[in-house]
Length: 168
Image (cartoon, rainbow, N blue to C red):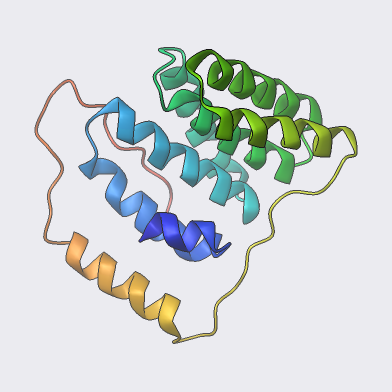
């Protein structure tokens, strides 16, 4: 649900769900995607603290160059673009494109290539779409958060501990 809300551009609505689900995701393959989506959403809502912390976690996990690294780096590049960090975004997008090409992931390679072109033109980053108050998106987020309260984080000591962000 968080990925759908995120894809629709409702980044501020996706953030609470992404943060709630993060501790429940112990494996690097899935965790890197949740962190990358959080970084991109944080960029879109211009939350610098949240962006920098999740971006750093993604870059660290991407060093393993798993099959999800390219897509994750692409999303962090998008987040960096939202802060007009043009060089950083270009470096991450180029890294995402190389990783995707090496793994035969043409979709991410094309997205990263397009992003590089947009960065050269200094095109702005994501804009948060605010859904109507009390509408479908708000109801879905509330329902998912309520259901996630019933779950506990895995007790695997090898799992990366959840990031903790200040509450506002």
